[in-house]
Image (tube, rainbow, N blue to C red):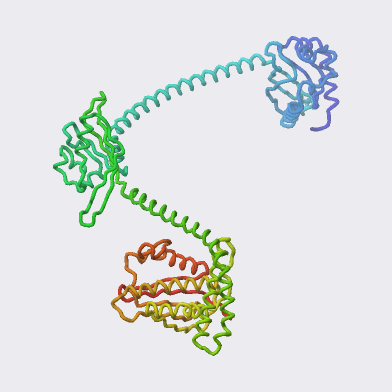
Length: 555
């Protein structure tokens, strides 16, 4: 703004003084708030309305500032309007509330303000303004009330519209529901059909004449029918059953007695040539209508052949478990017996050593004496191993470095005379391996070799077609640093039907009392424990070769 024009202001005040009565009449009788204010809101002159707002006499208004009527934000906005009126030389009208409570609305006064600038004789704007304010509080309240009424009306219209839309949706949904219900009725028969054909049991139902009303696909398959519809209106005599036992007699009993048969197990024979068995569990109940009147029979049966076979297998395993328990008891007994055997064995070894000086010079006697000493020491070692296993001690440690060639030679030397002179079985040894050290337990590996040689001996004895009974032991190395031990016999071989079972625990083909079925099972577990593999090749009537593969120790 420009500097305050004192001359113009003085002239205006003179004019106002000259027309004081007329001016007071205008200010005091005007039906609105009137005031002359400076650019900073200082009241230069005001009427009764303004004095009532400030609650002071008119004469005291000169000391008041309009800023008392506004909060800070509203006052800053008011000053912006004053400056805009001055700078743009135009009148400005706006509405706003002041910090006074209206007695009727119980809310702040709402005024419609008009700012008019004063101009000098040369039409230059002065830094004085005529401010008029009309109380529109009741009008604003009425407008607010009207807006609330309109909002209520709109809300009620919306609510009614929503009700109508909801009613329309309900009608639409009811129509859709009825259509869906009709579709479900159409689909229900197919759904029931699908359920019957999916469940893993056979289902059929008959009328009072015991003619079929229907069945599921599994039942039709048992009758060698292409479709379940082919059973309708037929009886059991007209159908081809694959079971000897028919259900007709059971159906008749249920129909006549009006009582159910549940969980009845039937055994049938599918093939008379190989006596193949199959088992079914059947349940037959009276078929009733909505009036609870019997109109036929409903039958369900399932194939429980696998369950029966599993029960047999479980019984077999329980028997084997009993054998295992007996072996455990035998082991405890062995622990006591071992102690009893060990005492006389020590005496026997001592006397054998004393006998040595009496057979000096007798080469055959010395040889037999050394074998007897070796046999006694082996018995002692076996007894110690058995006791250690019962105590869960790691005497048969699988991390020892062992000479496999030495194990082979000592094992064969121990049994050679018995095999040769008692069973007429020759043993040939070909130690071709250059690297013959591996990790394992010497006594355990001797027992492995002993089991394989004993089985080979039994196999060559059974094969009476050959006069020469021969077992060959051969070692060799592979390119990937493994030692191969082969135990080959020219015995009877292993039949195809048991080849996948020979390493199973407790499996044996020997007569009762001749074998426990533990030998090859222990051989397999022992070799596997030390990181090796065992396999076999066999041909019925020609013999079997067992191959052990062990990782060697590279010096």
